[in-house]
Structures are given as structure tokens and as C-alpha cells.
Image (cartoon, rainbow, N blue to C red; front, top):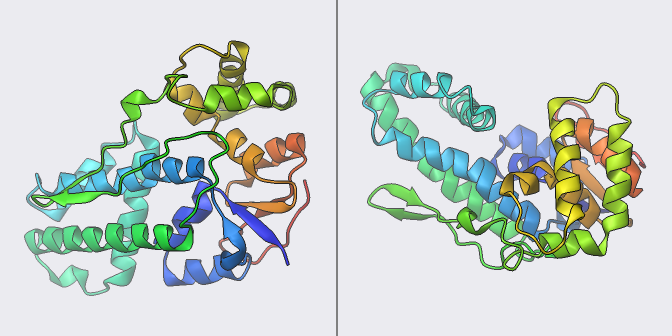
Length: 272
């Protein structure tokens, strides 16, 4: 029986996706024999979860649903956040075919209530499916759940403390496996043409392994997220992701089995 280590993209789709998407993922991986790490959990919290909490809270200062669309359209500079917002809006209309019968004011209230339920249900699924996290990287030990306060979600992840090497195990983890990450950087340097994300990862890897006992930019942690997740995966598990583009070279460098979760058609495990 295969075991699976899930990256953040699969966790989000599995817990917040439509019923059809969940069925497609479950046809390709055994969820009961899957796990995530604390790093993946924190990446989900600071990424997708924070993005849809942002959208929910923003709705409180708006008057109509058209203002929601205007806000999302103008957030193109934060592409990751905009992508999460667009996914939520698309799912909302897919689940509520009668939404067009509401006024703009009513639609805003309906959407905000739906977002509140979406956050609660999706986050509960994440906690239920993956109650225990391996924490090899030494990411935050205690990550709070989001709480409602006066109709606003509060979720203090204390990301302002990220980057202090005495409080975070990242530098220690990379130092313990420095040869792996140096080799990965050499592999990525040979990727032609390299996209902007790969170029940033190459720069950040060197910053993180160059000097062990020095604080670092949290952006370097974020940019090396895929590499850290792949390294945490054991060589007896399939790393499951929807983002094969960047994981393929990383898993090849670490000799980790890779499974590309196809959200349209079933795919077979592919050994790196």
C-alpha cells in the first residue's frame, strides 16, 4: 500500500475544493494513508487560509457584492491572494446557482455568510484529516486556530517572529542536510529557461545555507518552501502535488517519488 506526503496545494484542494475535486483527488491518493508536516500546515495557514480570511473581513467594509469584485480585480499585484479569492468566488457561484436573484446588497451578505461557513468547514477538515504533524524543520510548535471576534476573523500567526534563527529550526535543519540543499541549488542552476520563482529559490537557498547562526528573511523561507517540503518527504512516500512544474526537478535532486495529482484525469505515480 502506497503512503503519501501531501504538499499545500493538495491539502487546500482536498479540504476546500468542490465535491467533484475531492472525489478526483481521493481516486488518486489514499487520504487515510497520507500525512503532512507542520511546515505544510503553516504554509497553508499563512497562504490560502489567510487569503480567504482577508476576503471575509474585507466584506465587512463593503456595501455591495460588486465592490467585492472590484476589490479582487484590483489586487492583481498580490497574485497569490487574488488567485485564492477568485477560487472562492468561483466555488460560491458553482454552489449557489440562484445567487443572481439577489440584490447586490443581499448578495454581499450571502457571500460573507458562505465564506464564514467555508472557512469553518475547510479548516475543520484540515484538522480532522491531519491531526498530527511531523515537524522535522522545526516550524512553529503552536499555531492557533482562527477565531471570530465581532464578526471579524482573528488569526495571529506571529509571522513577525519568523526569520529569527534562535526561535526557528529552519537554519538548523538546513545545516544538518546542507549537502542536499547545495546539490539542489546546483541542479536548479542548470534549469533553462528558469522562471522567476526558480531564480528566487536559487538565491534564497544560498542565503539559508551559507551561515547557520544568523537571522534570515522570512521571504527566503517562503521561496524555499517547495524544497523544504520535498526534503521532509521520506523516500518511501509519494510526494503528492498539483504543482509538478517546480517539484519535478526538486524531487529528482532529492530522489523522492513524485505523484502529480491531476485535477482532471487520474494519473499514475511517477518515480523521480
